[in-house]
Image (cartoon, rainbow, N blue to C red; front, side):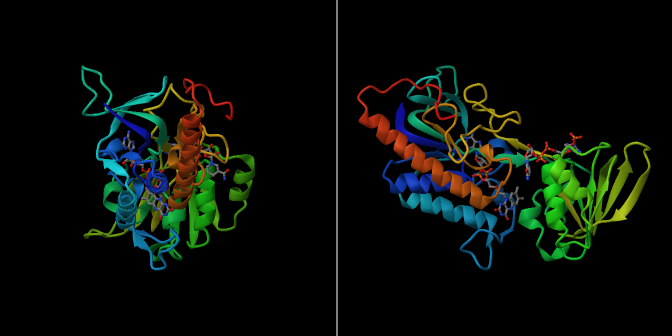
Length: 339
Ligand code: FAD
Ligand code: NDP
């Protein structure tokens, strides 16, 4: 059975940044990039989008897949071993930690690999609504990230809609108000879930209208290849009344699902299922297990913040390995006193 000092699970900006740092530190990290893990290609969420315009270093923007290919090449250049398999199971109860892949997870129960330290960088997925028309107009008017996509020309001075009533919806609506002619927030209930401060700012914003008891039921648009959305069918959930309104942008802010099924019950998760980390660090509730990227960040969810937290995880894993190697008695894994 193979053993590594450090294994990284995931393949987005967090995982690759961690890999670049750890391989440059000559720790020979092994990175499991996944085989369509959670339905997303290796490379993570950015492989599902076109131009990235807010990642520093690319003044003309860069394609999401190209950016991730570059990060992957950079990880390999310094000696990261990348394995195109999904980690299906981990045992974090004793050191070395044990990891199984989909291929190794058979009746013999031998793990594919053991590791002294594990970095969890499995990301998160924006929830979708599966509305009629959603597949056709996804990224052609529909987005799950206003900060990522809001500034593109198709939304300038156009009526835009946000679905959701939480802090993300409030933040996205106010961000979009800089670009759209108007922003309407569709809230399915008769109240917002957002914090009081955010709700107050949202409800008093001059360019934002909040429609309560409202649900989108269909996205309508141009009937040609790569056609854009132009209208939205909205239903009043209290009266059942429907209407079709002009809409050139639709932003989902109905929550994210962090990819934490793998570690649930083994390390501490917060009430929404994200890995709990000590603020400002990548340290989880278990020593030797680190988390970075969207799997532990429900607030910022950006490529650059994921990359930054990947760097933090690598530096902390490197220090942890050095410290445990320096001590003669390697203690069994135990609750992280830092958390
Ligand atoms: P992710 O990108 O979520 O990738 C994690 C990957 O790990 C998974 O996709 C999967 O391949 C792999 N994985 C998961 N589980 C396992 C497992 N068990 N075993 C092995 N592998 C596994 N951010 C920006 O800054 N700018 C933008 O313009 C921008 N545009 C976006 C557009 C879209 C459509 C989306 C969805 C997101 C966008 N984002 C953008 C957000 C950005 O993509 C995320 O913040 C970032 O990708 C999170 O990185 P991550 O490293 O946490 O992991
Ligand atoms: P939340 O889970 O807080 O809110 C999701 C919203 O989407 C809710 O209003 C929910 O409605 C609605 N929703 C869910 N499913 C559907 C559906 N099928 N159709 C229509 N509406 C739906 O997620 P957020 O991403 O907003 O926030 C996640 C966490 O991150 C929270 O803890 C939040 O406080 C935090 N955060 C903080 C920020 C800040 O402080 N600036 C910014 C962004 C996030 P309902 O209420 O009816 O369930």
